[in-house]
Image 1 (cartoon, helix red, strand yellow):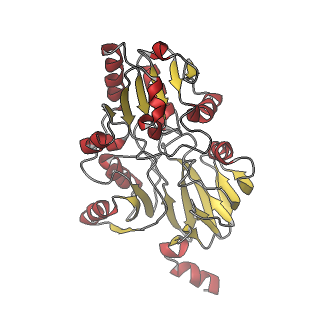
Image 2 (image 1 turned 45 degrees about the vertical axis):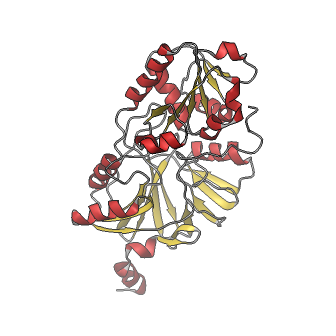
Length: 356
């Protein structure tokens, strides 16, 4: 066997992908996945700011993720960019990568990295629940599956998002003199909530905080019909009675809310399963709607991949690692740092404060 053949025969998963301070590094391919600091070559799974950061030399991502980075950071967010489509395969260095839908937000992708007959799937953030605003999650057979664990405890079972939207619309009908403010992350969650409201039969105008406008209009440009949407800025207080407004979570506890008549504050998040969190934030109407897999979704996905080894990252790692081990799977926490939870808190972008 030649030296190269010897090397390939001895290759292990951790020789292909390894955690480093910048993030998840693929040494044989010469790139990082979702790096948290500037690197020469980055593969980005989706557009949320804890995964998609500016300043890389070269970025490979889906068209939607590249577009969202451009919207957020400007045209010069990276030295150069390259688009990869779902199902597309690329050879990078000594590895082959393939892009699969993650079901998290528009354009979100899982990255399958194959080298020496070992396939590792980096899921990024994902959910297996239906979402009318993005391509459904696809379970990818692999040897090693890298899973998030944002809601990696058995207490987190999200239920049907359509039922949560019914709660919202029932409240709107019950309190016609009050405005309803729904806190929702600006990328993905807000557009999903709007679409679910439309699917429930609500066709009145829905109002937007200014920070929501760019990304929501982008969703519409990709063929996602969200109905009559209007900016709330400039609308008279009395005219907002009986209406629904979507805003970043940070805005719903801001002086900005004073423009609304006796507002009912709602928050769309998987964290609303924990009642103490809703109380701490002063949320009157918690809506359990998440763009991350719940406990059942996590363990079902792990099973569906057929992977014998599971690497768990950002979230409730220990419980999921323990569950995997009780099922006879090799499992370990990756302990990557720098990834937040967009559901829990969102700071307004510069220049898009309470006046929007």
